[in-house]
Structure formats: structure tokens, C-alpha cells
Image (cartoon, rainbow, N blue to C red; front, side):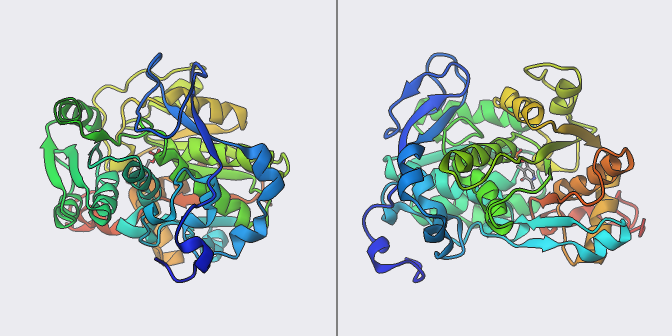
Length: 413
Ligand SMILES: *Cc1c(COP(=O)(O)O)cnc(C)c1O
């Protein structure tokens, strides 16, 4: 186990305050200590709930900040109960980079990049799957299954390997090679499916029914969200227990957006932050923007997007089980939603690359395009602190830059 842990914490309990799980739509309460997926009544996501009242009396921020640099520093507010089940490859606690040269170029000096590309397996999916696989291990799962556009599959494969679990991944047939290679090397069984992530979901469901594999789909079990929420805790910690003014986040299934907002709620109940909240901005691709459309149409649920197409694999999610939760967060935070083109993402990645030294994934680059648009429209004012999330490394998307006549021709735009 990581040596930075205190000896008293290395074995035994984590001190988790997890109390129960609760349906996000109908509010039904369920016992937390068993493997389960969606609400048995309304088939919507279950959320982990903690005894925050007791935690607010007992848990000190200083206890958290004295710990090692990974997401398990928030262990009391995560669902894993036994320390020996915490699977750790160094996920989380990523750098928050003051984007000085990029900010100078854009005449905006309070711009930050949360650099999630440094996570194990090269994306922030490691956060959600570290926690979800750890908890599944704790609750007795032996075999796990996931439909994925690419990054989630790699992350699940890594933690399943560490846990000694069987991993079955389902990705679109046209997923870039690095995602497939990664899963295979990490010991997963790889299934390539005709279509997009929703078709992968259908294919994966068969194995879940027939072989009793545990389903790790986004928001179809309660604990990936718990891993993702740590991004919210980290932002508060980095800003000395205050929150920035605007968070710009590339949205697919929505766990990051929903998870951070949950973290803010929890921290406020713990008395760790006041009631100043960021405006949350969801960014999607023009080729697949169900949340952007639903937000601007004033809908509570999103219509599935027909024939989704984008180079940003993580954003190719035509319909999401947590759609209403994302829309709630955008509205509650007085945020907004923006669709950007693939070509703009590639150009933005090049601008981030040459000014900040970060090879961003197209999803991460999309946040820069959205920021510039919102700044031009006056929706973001000067002096406001703005976080762009680079959700993954650009390395797995290198094919987008590999041919001289392809979309990313290094135009220097
Ligand atoms: C999955 C993914 C997203 C979308 O994340 P959600 O939290 O599911 O909305 C964004 N960027 C990358 C690189 C991804 O892999």
C-alpha cells in the first residue's frame, strides 16, 4: 500500500461515512452494501449518500490535506469501507495549471487548466473506475463489463487487472487503435461493436444478463460518480476552500458535471465552503449535442441525437441516462451549454499545445473553443476565474494529426 498513508490507516477501515444509496429521480432509499445498478422502481441512477451531519462534526479538512496525492485522500467521503480494497494507480490530485501564456494570447489572465491527462490510462475516467472497481471488488463482483467510447474501457481494464477480476469491454468498431491495444494489454476481453456507445451498451447487456457480469456503464452503478466528484473536492482544495467562477467541461455521459456539483453540495453541508458556486458550462460537439439542444429548448430530459458523429470519442454519447441531472446542474448553476465543431477542437488543441505544453485531447480542446465564444459574447467577464478541463491526453488521438491531408493538418490556426 502507498507509503504516504499513516500506519493506522494502512489496514482496516477507511472511515467512510457512506450511509445508503438514493434514487436520483424518485428518491427511493436503498441499502448501500450490495451490488446494484439502477433504481428498481424507475430505472434511473442511484446516488451514494453519506452521514454528512456526523462528518461535519468529526472530519477536518486538515486531515484530508495531510494525505498522499491521489483521490483516496478523500476516503471518508468515498464509498469503499475497507482500505485493502482501495485500488490505487495514482489517480486524481492532478495539477491545476495557471494558463499564463494561453491567457496572454487571449487577453484573459484568470484562466486555469485542470490537467486530467496525467491520470493513469491517460484520462479522468481513471477516477470513476478506480472507485467503482474498488467498491465492486469489496461487494464481491468477480467479473465486470463496460460499454465505452474508449477511455472508460481502458480505465476499467486497468483496475480490474489490479483487482484480479475478469474485464469485458465493448467499444465501437471504429474506435482508434490505441484504445483497443490498451485494453488488450491490460488483459480485458475486447468486443468491437457496429455502431456507437449506445449499441455497445446493448451488446454488453447480453453478457450481463447471461453471465452475471457486473455492469459498469456510466451512472448505471452509483460509484463511478463518486470517483469523478473528487475533481470538485480538488478544485476547492486548490483554491483554498473557495470555488472558481466558471467551470467549462466537455460533456458525454455527464458524470463529471454531475459529480462535481454533488461534491459542492457535500462540501457546503460539511461547512467546508460557503455558498458561492461556479456557473457550469457543458461543451459538446456539433455532431452530437443532445444536452446543448435540450438545454436551449428548455427541456427536462434530452432527446436522443440521431447519427452522432465527432472525432471527440468521449462526446459521442447520443443519449445519457443522467440527462436530467446534467440539465438540472446547468440550470441550478446559471450555467449554459455550447456546441463546437471538430475543426475548431483541432485548432484549439494546437493553440493549447504551443502555449501551454499540454497535448490536449479533442474533448479538452473543445472547452477552449467554448470559453472563447462565451468571452466574446460577454457571458464571461474579465477577472472571473475560469477552469478548462482537459479530460484526457491527446496521445490516444494522435491519428488525428498523422496525415498531411487529414482534418488536423497542423495549420497553426
Ligand atoms: C468520457 C469522456 C468525456 C465525457 O465525460 P463525462 O463525464 O462522461 O461527461 C470527456 N472527455 C474525455 C476524454 C472522455 O473520455
